[in-house]
Amino acid sequence: MDYDVVVVGGGPIGAVAARSAAEVGARTLLVEKGNGEGKPVRCAGLVSPRALPTLGASGESVIRQIRGGVIHSPVGRKIALRSDAVKGVVIDRVALNRELLNLARNAGAMVHTHTRVTSARRGSVSTTSGNDTEDIQAGVIIGADGPRSLVASSFSLSPPKEMLIASQATIVGPVRSGDEVDIFFGRSIAPTFFAWAIPAQEGEMRVGLAAPIGTKTDELLSGFLIRHKFGREISRIQGMIPISLARKTIADGVLLVGDAAGQVKPSSGGGLYTGGVCARIAGKVAGGASLAGKTSESDLAVYEREFGEEIGNELRFGRAVHSMLGDIDDTGIDALFGAIDRPAIRKLIARYGDIDYPSRLVHAIASRTDLWPAFRSLIPILGGMERLSSIAHMALVSDSDAYV
Ligand SMILES: Cc1cc2nc3c(=O)[nH]c(=O)nc-3n(C[C@H](O)[C@H](O)[C@H](O)COP(=O)(O)OP(=O)(O)OC[C@H]3O[C@@H](n4cnc5c(N)ncnc54)[C@H](O)[C@@H]3O)c2cc1C
Image (cartoon, rainbow, N blue to C red; front, side, top):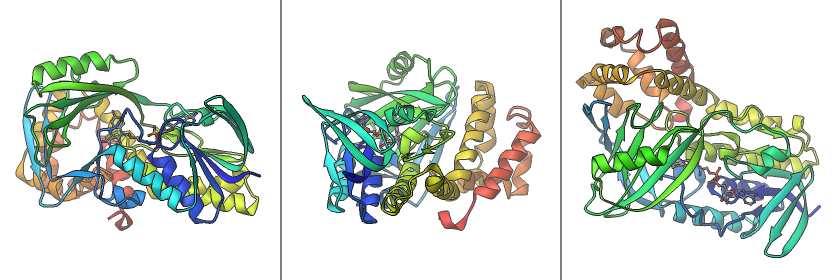
């Protein structure tokens, strides 16, 4: 066998999986079709402060810290939220990709960039690099090749069922900087999801929106940019965001991780933290299984069990919230803004708001019986008592001190 583990895809999640496999002593190869920088960057680069240590990265890619934000309702009502604590950091994704690939190399993984995997089957992958083609034997293959995973389709693993399409522009000019982000809701802005404006490097902003596949997000974004006059657009990308976990992430000799597996928070579309949690487990399980010569689907099942324990409840909670918000029209969203725009709730948001674990905030609000009357009139808008109870129940079981 050439390698114990071959990781397909050198995005942030593949790099972490490769490092983790190398750290358990597995001979590991990572194959990336691009140059490893991940350009063009399909990411807003907003993560929680815990995401970088989870990925094993230093803070060298951090551009700024975020302590607050303004949420905008469909009719323009604004709620300003602020916390003393750092709630998020904005990162330079190219710098993060580079750092994570270097960490994988330092741990002993081989990294082949400019090399594309053209097919995969149990025990081997075929690659092309320039005019060269190669068959590489692998004990276990890790598919970290993004939302349209070739590895997944090669092993007949269905892709994540629900995907969003996102468009994002880089805006320059005298743009808003500071430590706040703006989030905009509304069916005509970003159906079932939201738009964002995130300050990045000085004089630069990332403005984007996401919506269900089939939506003309580029057109929506152009209109949005004209209305808000953020500044001058210098570049634009489009990308897919899987927001449901793949039904199966393992098969004989293979496991999927990151966007390929749909390990993304459905409430925010963020995949760096959740993918990072899973990538560490994926590398460890793949490396251990390959070294032990036990690489069948049942040998790899521990991967699904372990990542399910870490993030399963929160992903299920996020799906339920995403689907509930997707069913509410603009009048309903506005009414929801009315309910949360009160000092007691803003205080809870500042304290418990957590982009990785939104269930904590719902848990905190659900535990305050004195606040329930504010939400009574919203029960029909939010889908009825049964749906709300089920979401509150999920928030209660999701919440764990282990996540703090
Ligand atoms: C517009 C947008 C904004 C986002 N904003 C945020 C955010 O603010 N915060 C956050 O946490 N998440 C965000 N995300 C999601 C986040 O970017 C992804 O979850 C993350 O990039 C997943 O990493 P990955 O390594 O799994 O996949 P990717 O980053 O897609 O990497 C996959 C890699 O595989 C390589 N590859 C693919 N096929 C092959 C092949 N056949 N052979 C060799 N290599 C191959 C690709 O070149 C690529 O480098 C955003 C996504 C989008 C689209």
